[in-house]
Length: 375
Image (cartoon, rainbow, N blue to C red; front, side):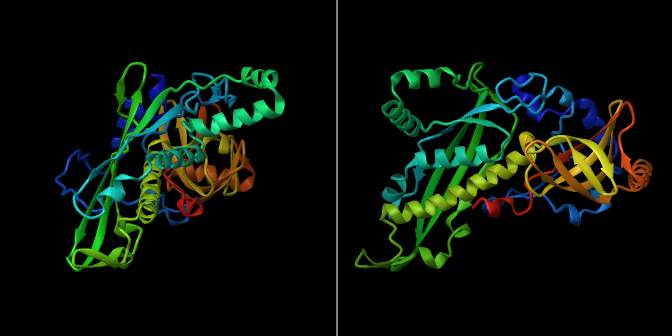
């Protein structure tokens, strides 16, 4: 199914990976569920990998990469890297709690969260985002009309087709607030985000990508002392202005930004970037795709061979992309005959995969430092 190609994993590959484990597979376990805040998970640096860490991650897809032409408006349907066209929705958030601060929290503008969500998702270059910022689009078209005239505007609009979504991503949020103490009190805010991926034509809620629930607390982004206030005779005296929409918006904005960052880290794990290795010279690798396939700066990628349906890890690499290609350094070679033979050949010159065998590189998650550079 076209909408699921970005998260597909063949049953054969899954069985093969399970078969490579040294211990019998254990599919379930008893585990306590924590109600604490969610944390962002980032990829381990390629320089910190051990031999046992070099395993192909889930959700990779190498079938049909040769069909990709990277024509953004006419990409081949068989290309697994074809970027899904997505429209995003953010609900009118529900607010829980009672007493102090509920009114100011309820006044938060959800449109800000939607714009933040669109900007962050567009920046990872694994989707084409249809913006819902109708106000800005209409304003720009009005300016163009005034400066260039109606015929020029009609001509310009006619040169482009409005994007049609492959699926929609909807985020539901729940905001809660509570106070602790009587005279000296603290405001505690919680933001919960849940996501749904929906096929708007069949009305089906899709199972991938599965981003789960994200919970952010005010103490994750503010020192608790910053949210302390003092009341006397049931009236505000000093400290955090829990009733002031501007002050509350600043806190919720930071909480939402953290929540969206966590959402992105999960998305980048569920939707890895895949490239084909053109050659290996020494420890250097040359890749046939870069930013155009969603490869990010300082990407950690597993290098592996794919031949007759069999997968064998070769090493782990630190990768730097350009617009349409990438280069990388294999920081650790996997122990084994295949990796050893390739390494020996690459020391003498350029190793190129033999006929019938292809070598790929697949990302393992959000690059270390990526979130900090986007703040």
